[in-house]
Image 1 (cartoon, rainbow, N blue to C red):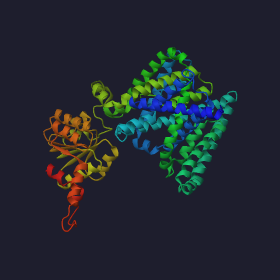
Image 2: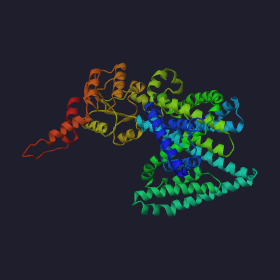
Image 3: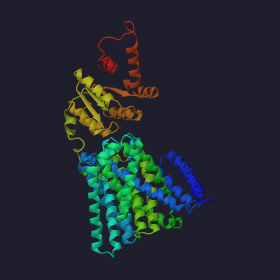
Image 4: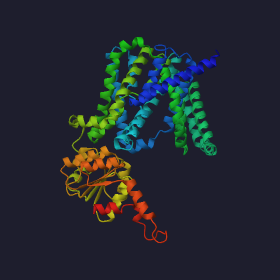
Length: 570
């Protein structure tokens, strides 16, 4: 049988197996990374021994890694780090430093030699940006304060891991020259020239070129891939690594107005090619070492699952954030990332670690990714159980989140408190203010809070599901509490917290479906807001023929669809 046909059949079988295991992972609410590594183990020499086209799979794996680093560089959002200020840098660098130092000592206690121990310790510090962003997006928490902080320090981690790869590449280059300082400086000097050349292209060549080819989306994506792979190859040829070259290529396009269009089209290709990296990684695992690795992997996994969140909570608590924010942000670092596995593979190729050490890193990755996924999915339930023991991580006044907390709790008065300052909630708040009401807005998106304050009405950061926030709000003299979130659980949690606080005013909750509306009514809500149904009913009223089919008169209030709501509130 021709070699091409054999490889084609092998890849087809691997893809079918990966799709099946990915579906199982989806049912178990696990990231597909876990399934792909499991497929590699199952199809590799330790399992069914299907993987024979190692060179072809390795090529696709290297392309996947290059595209991963390219997209990371392309989406490097330094603006987000600057907006989050000290907290992103403090938590990112603090957690990396703590995990590296303590993890190194733990690895030595577990019997690893110093160099492998250092690599394992560094691998434990990085968390998966891809997995965390996906989980937070699914939970609609990516714009919450803890979500923004998490993304901020994950970006800091990405920068640190790239820096670690640069140092590793320079060290490898120096080793080639009998460890001489001159060889090491030569690699670094070449790197400076490389970066200067890319900077020149960013300033004078790429803007005009991208503007010309952007007329064809297909050509734009093709150029982006070619640019990323070419700089990856150049970086490797100059003595760095393919990963560094690809990252620099991404950064060179990050300031382009076309970066979002490029990134959105490359994500699917990146994820597909990364499949082969995880398959290859799984196929390299030797299950003969599993018994001896299980104990160390369990100890290191517990350190990552518990130690990493604790240090983030300690740093954020010291900086003045609430224990709830620190806890939810801390859970996002309770796993190691795909970069940890890439760093381990790179160290293996350089001869700095052996296959059992890479297997140890991979096993820790499987355990921590699997467990932390459930920790993040059920983060609010975990917090409710652990909250009484977390007060040590919170200052008496959480000034970083709410500098006016004391004022709000003791003297501020509001006729209505609105949870959710999106277009719907903001419109309600503005309408009530126009009728002379004193309105206080609450939202978990800091930008929404800032936008409300720019419009001239008070707003605070907060989450409707945080019972401690309710205790700090001026609900005593409040006539109405309005929640615009369509999530039934959020509304029910808020209603229960208000009752525990002794709130005696009226409550308006939002429902997306009639079944949710019935549930909220039975729970005791005074008014159910159904934005889509209410808007449709109002549209029917406006479309109903008046004078020979012609709609006349002032439609400023009618167009808002708020007349019925305001009549209920008043």
